[in-house]
Image 1: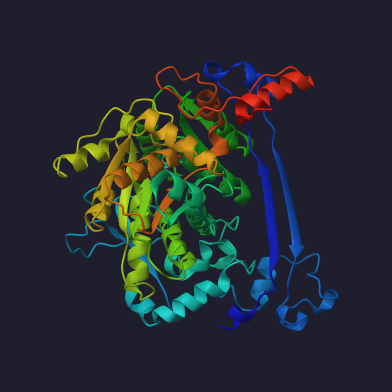
Image 2: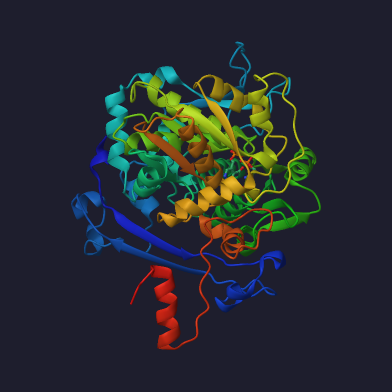
Length: 538
Ligand SMILES: Cc1ncc(COP(=O)(O)O)c(C=O)c1O
Ligand SMILES: N[C@@H](CCOP(=O)(O)O)C(=O)O
């Protein structure tokens, strides 16, 4: 484990000021004054990357840096540096393969991860199965120490929250083939005020998976999928690109990771059903963007047909590689609590890959001795797109897809989720619950959370609203350690926030709207405004 002691870490800080856009239906006076232009969807993008070397715990000699006065040679990359220390040796001990997702039956069927395959012979979804016997050769203490030693480093590729768990994710990939933006390691926010003041809770946390390279949790899965595609292309497998159907976040992640690797990306988007910020992401990253006159389920059907005819690799969560990356968020939560397990984890659900990914991550931690139990899972859906909720309420009998209606939680406007079987399995086995939130409930919940310092997306609003309901019924207790998974950055969804705070959404009351006051620029008017707002008697 020589590599564990090497801490030649640099810290990369990347600030990205997101895009602002307003659709016609959400434009209004103060938005224009703040610089939101109704016609051209004014946009700004600033990305500043500051790379500063902050510490060297190994000698320059050890780090291979001696030849340039302790600095990395101009021609070197962090991959070269890792290679010199044998870090890029292909691991031989651990392995994984595809098996049919059939948890209640045994089967001999399996496939190599180097095959291009998404379904079993009889049409089941696939699952990535790890050689658990090999992983169990090492005890929980070993894994905890290994994973903990990698946090906050830039040692390639372990500076990524996903690849810091590489042995549990894609153990056989050569580190040189990995395409990573050092995703993961997202902050776990103690929602102190929201918990105490709104819910009487003392141990409420929000896992900010949306504070990420492309602004959503999709980065966690996409680094794995695009890395594997990168490997397949190097193996000369017949592939011309990678494609997905998307409600905006999968497409953003796919486009960014493909652009980083120089791989063509093709994205199918439902026209006028995703936010401007989400739309501009694949455009900016040079993807082929098809805006289709259908909904997400229609886009999904089309991309499946296209990928059957053309060698385009399918990047939706139907592809189980994605879930291997996404499951690391669950492992990370345990790690952030010093390997203690929360009582509840609440995840907004759409295509339903993520709820299963969380389940998988928690189960793996328990099976490999890092934790002693798994949390209860809650999947939260928008009432306008609630097929899982209806299925749960019907006692899990006879799943019926729905036609999803428009919702502010547009990324989960999905009526026929691909991973329904995986989600049902995860929920049944975690004593899980499904809740739903109306448009008013989800927007109010997001606004309330924002008032306590967050900047939540509507999907996080769905999860927070589910929490509020379960707390009200006392299903979730006041001292239960609870984690709400925030799946995207609120800055991707400024249109709906602007509409809410300007009270432009006629169907709901917008109870917590906080529009700016338009005040004449003289002291008297300013004082009057402050008096009324602050209840001053002066
Ligand atoms: C922001 C956001 N939240 C939640 C989800 C739901 O995740 P899943 O489709 O894995 O259920 C998605 C995508 O579907 C999303 O983009
Ligand atoms: N919200 C998703 C919908 C597709 O989900 P996926 O996980 O199957 O790719 C998106 O952003 O496109």
